[in-house]
Length: 410
Image (cartoon, rainbow, N blue to C red; front, side, top):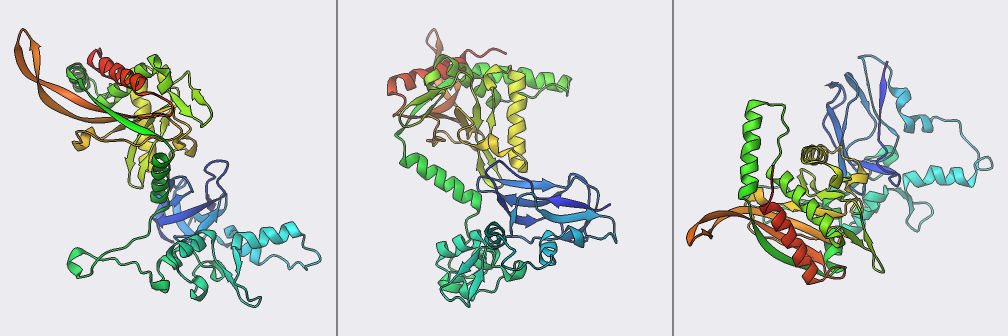
């Protein structure tokens, strides 16, 4: 029996999603777990996996389409099975005609709004364009009135705008050797969201960064013990250096709860539990998923939870509720694997702090009795909102993180 592929509802406020890429084509065989398409909300990007084995009988929305949530996007079934009845837009088109007298004002709005019927000033000339395509055209200064839409019923969708050369705006795909002067690509929704959040954070808060280094001999010793356990028993949880640092940050936040807060303009909301955000680099851009109630977990559970939200973010299956900036009470961003020695992380408002974790560098140090040697140090960069925390308490909090790391025991 054929089965509809339905656009998920990602969060209570999400009404439409945009299909950014199809990984399967009409007629392709699919298996449960295969990625069918990627889609974006106004907050994040996701992949939709097939829940069925079969053949992709029909695709109702092409790439670039803005699709209402819970709509049928495609159909999976056996070869030869009927699929036309799943096409909701076609079903609506073939419905019995309703006279103006019979149609309520609410029904008229419901019929017109999804099509984004735009009046251009001439009552005889009306243009069907999706809200996203209209915004994109206005941002690029493109006159969309002369563009032929490729969407349903001639509706102009975002890909029509991106492929247009109207208004002097052109997207050029080229390699450095092709002789063109530059390449220009439109920003993805996720990139726009990241840019807006980062700019807003720097514009609307008083951010300051303190740098400090921690002796990580205890962490490296613990890491070596974990590797030996993994070699003997593959079922052991692989606890990383980042997991250990996050554990130490949580312990420090418990001692300095003012850093485990949200600044809300006229008040400070201090949390009794740590909901830890972790910056994750994904193919779609930066995401900051949260591990809820991280302060109640032991190191093994925390490690598993951190890996779980990171993998879900990379796959595009993370819940939108877990990537809201308000979901976390503090964030850790680790660039140590990239060899970064020092950086200034940007706060994820309304949080009041974020810790940047840097690479490990061996430095000369006094080992005692005037004996000097090289000691591995990890750079720590704490950015805090000076509206909520003064420099003294922020420094003491950073020092506590350092001491938790240097006195770590596994």
